Image 1 (spheres, rainbow, N blue to C red):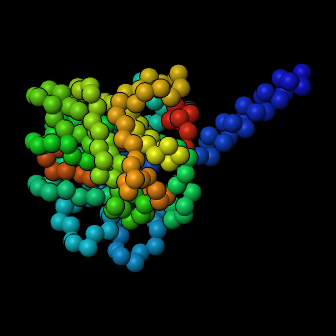
Image 2: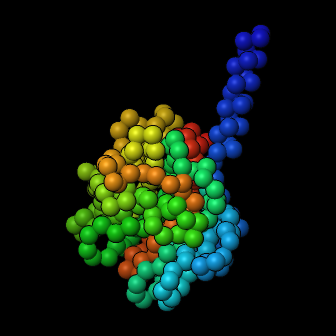
Image 3: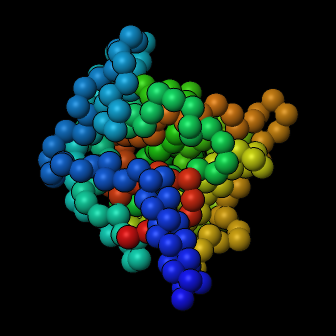
Length: 254
């Protein structure tokens, strides 16, 4: 009996620990058509925690705030709610940032950023970043990014970076399909990994779809304080259903 109680207690404590380490509902309260950004950071602004804002830039940005779009769904992934629209303006790009913290807690062990994405159009050219993580709550100087590029007329390919080092997925993926992307930052082993459409419910896959390993002079360091979204005029699609956690179980938790 004592053993059963102990196991039950440990299970509850484990679930509580997971819940405490998951940031979710990043688009809570938004409805389709709303502007994403609540304000735009200037150089001296304090943190607006758990909020989407225009990233600070020394040069004025003429592109408008992204807008909110349809809900995305991926089988077995429990994060629900609306997404962010790509595009919506004529040219250029714009950075928005979700400010997580002004502290140093997100700078050790392993960290994961999960999201859903669906592209129906991509601009010409090579790999281009669209989501990343920054050591500043105002955005900029991303430590790791996720990239995407066209592959022929009906396929896309993803990539991942650690600062200036980059690796692309060997596989290509379908246009017009919702994909689950998981960016992993492993501070202990100096690796940044990308999982594309991982099977859920069986634990973290042994092998990622793209991996970048740090080298001397190009290392994963500094705490992560913001999640940055780069909206591009010549892309059409949606991204959303974000989760930020320090364990794989946080991605799959109810």
